[in-house]
Image (cartoon, rainbow, N blue to C red; front, side, top):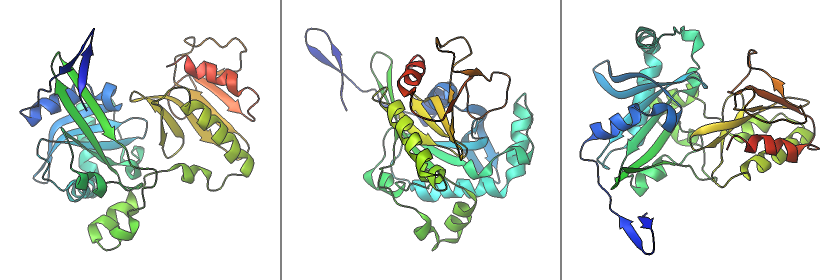
Length: 300
């Protein structure tokens, strides 16, 4: 992909490749919240003679995330990714201790949802084989591409799995390490939230899901354990939690930041709820769908 400056004539913006992995690491560690919505726990974390470039924590998923930076394309991201996942699952206490020693908060092992553990590889590019090897809907490995250009421009893109991606479980059954990891780690899909729901709830969910996605071109659906999040520019803007008789919607905004002239929102700033945001709406039908979309749109 080429970048251009646009005046009367287009002028190409030249790429300035990173010379050192450390440059990429510093960029991400200094901007983890903005780029990935993660909390930095430790840079250069060593455990069992293995060095982890960046150890991070996902407060929403309540899970640890390992981030590795690569300039070389000649690596097996699947083998290395599962090695790190296995390392974490076999040494949970060490990760808890590291978090408690470096952060203001303290965690117990039971506070962490180990099933949401994942590994992210960050590189200036990935081969087709690497992309294909991680194109499974239930693999806890992410690929992020980063490129630097003139004029202090940086392009960062998470490589998404295809909608037709299959499950890795048939392959993991042939490998003891892969099988052990996939048994403990769960990557959630929309189907997991719909599997035991009535036709009415499924239809209601699909109506709101499609409406939210259509608010902008780059809104992504991110299924998690307890909700389906909707992400724009690496920030979750809304969450849907499917229940038996209705759906709960949370809008990620501070109370007072959204103009709700009809007063259909509830302030849950000081109440426990899933996701982030102070606005909660119970969805029983789609009668007010258009108005509710106008509320979410205020956060874009």
